[in-house]
View 1 (cartoon, protein in one colour):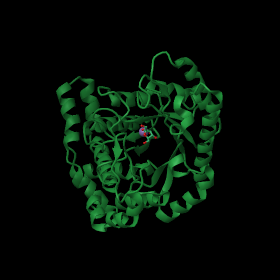
View 2 (cartoon, rainbow, N blue to C red; view 1 turned 90 degrees about the horizontal axis):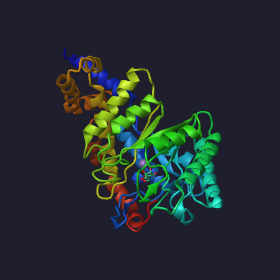
View 3 (cartoon, protein in one colour; view 1 turned 60 degrees about the horizontal axis):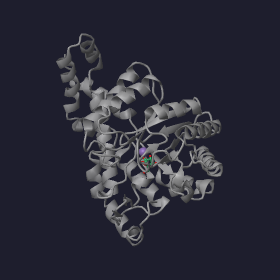
Length: 397
Ligand code: PSV
Ligand code: MN
């Protein structure tokens, strides 16, 4: 039996009320590929401008109350920068979200950070982890989100097992410094910048390191960090089952870690991930999941791309919420394959945009955030104010 319109609206409003997604400070700054950068006049050049942009995205969408910070890019002086960040939080109405240590850009990390064969370099990297945890504490941030570039490029040039042990140790020590409400999220990536072996290459390795670190550590799934054919929702189901799922970095990819807009290549993939989470929630697993965007756009306008991504995430989250999960479970039980698949696919093909629009109107938000961004003239104003700096900037931060 099909659900009534008001039942569908209830499901939709509940789902959208519960969905929040974090935006990355680095998504507002000029970035590029290793072949070059195309600077944008409206790109943020300071932490203040990044907070201004994040605040504007939150004003338009109402669902991005936190901004992920990258320590060296956003707090180059470490804890000393905390008061400035706090002032920006108050001024622009968005809080600091996950704190991302940066263990990949210093020259000394050429052969690794927490997995470097040099004990001094490992100690220095660990110190940065502890500083990042302290920054998170002072900012009231729950999550310290770790991604490392560590790995090697040629067979036989590093001891893979020694590096495992060094990393186990470093993460365990880091975990000991967490406050009780804090978490350590361990992100994996199969390759890039290392092209032979990466020290945390997949979800199994991340799960292992998180377990060795301690009970407040979890796995972070970046949707761009998988080989092409990998079944990401199965990984998510496993992480839910083993209670190790901590968060996501959302983006889309066609080939590797392409940083394309979420859902631009394979929206069905994200729908399937969200479905696993809705089922696990029904089953009482109560996963604590940090949804975050990890995209930095080179060609699209940064503000437009961020708003578009948030809207896409809401649409896909809602589509997955519309699956009649009771009926689906019955069809799975009787192995009614075609009916089960049609039910599942049917939710995916539902045009949920009118529902999201109705929800925004009911919550006093702009019905069409992209149109509202355009009408506001925010990007043009930013381009005028920032142009002389942003067009001269050629660094990532
Ligand atoms: C690495 O590719 C990554 O996904 C990590 O999350 C970094 O923090 C982020 O990208 C930097 O852009
Ligand atoms: Mn990431």
